[in-house]
Amino acid sequence: MFTHQHRGHRSPLRCLAQPRDWLISVFSSIAAIATLATPPVTAASLVSPNRPQYLVQADNDRDVNELLVAGQEFVSSGDLAAALRAYRQAAELEEDNARIFSAIGYLEARQSNYEAAITAYRRALELEPNVSEFHYALAYSLANAGEYEAAEAEYQATVELNDRNTNAFLGLGVMRYRQENYEGALEAYRQAAALNPDNWQVQESIGSTLLQLERYDEALEVLEAAAELAPNEGRIQVNLGVARLNQEDVEGALTAFNRAVELNPRDGSLLFEVGRLLLSQGEREQALDLLRQASRLMGDRADVHLTLGELLLDNNDSLNAILSLRQAIAAEPDQPRAYYLLGRALQQRGRTSEAIATLETALELATEQQAEALVEEIQARLDELD
Image (cartoon, rainbow, N blue to C red):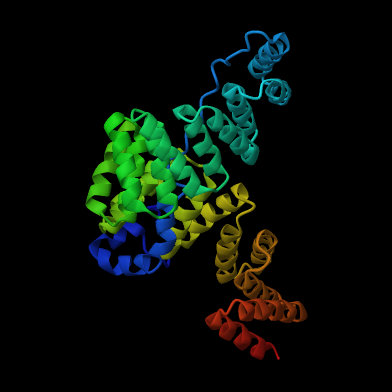
């Protein structure tokens, strides 16, 4: 797929004769490519808590018992809202039953009501503070609520109570990774690997963290092992490609990216990143194809529409560029570069008054955001139109 040659452009594989020349252009945009090694594309997914297997039922309260039985039946049938109502009624009747509050937290988290889940799990821990499962479940909800520091503390509490919990070490690593504590993340991931060396997610997480630490030889070794464990996981191939790219193995990198796209043809983030890589190489036609696919899959990603719109504009396809850039603005209304490019596209279509108005909006936003270089570009374009 990526080796097809287009007139006027070099094939990526032709650059093997002079890899450093090509890598200069790639490394100038390596920050964009490096996003492949950050969440959510490559960080391991957090493993959700297990469904509570049983509840401690009251000995003498028939009403509570009936509510608990009913709640469990509702969970089994998939009626989570009804189950939640039953457990909440039971909690009102038996306020000191930690397992009931744990069940409430589980059901709230299942419905993505993470703040409510946090409240319920904290109540369960007030009643039974040394239950590792409660700490783990609270950590998971805190992580999904974006409270990474608090989630890290709860994952730490989990492993202190149960140092055989691979998923807790994995979660601890993810939280540290998201806070850019890569050394700490690596330590946690290695502890998870010691417990479960054949877990590809753990190995892939170690590899992506080593990439962030710029330890490319180690990263490549670990990621190759992860690829052997999970040969059909596209995100491993993406990280493998990044590792090879940083070792100037252009052909190997492109092979990995190609494999990633084959494995995940509907992963918009992956298609977008590979498209940008190809664009940096001058493979505009192939990049355009991937960027179009990514834009269809990720309609809410302003950066995808912006990149596609700019490429279309450079290709003198101003009509489609206008459509893409308007989508970028709809997704993120305060980005001055999108307005600037839209103004250029409108100018290219001969819609001068609209172009001026759009460029003036771009100038206002760029000035507010102190984007000095962009302000100069916009002002020069407006001067041309006066």
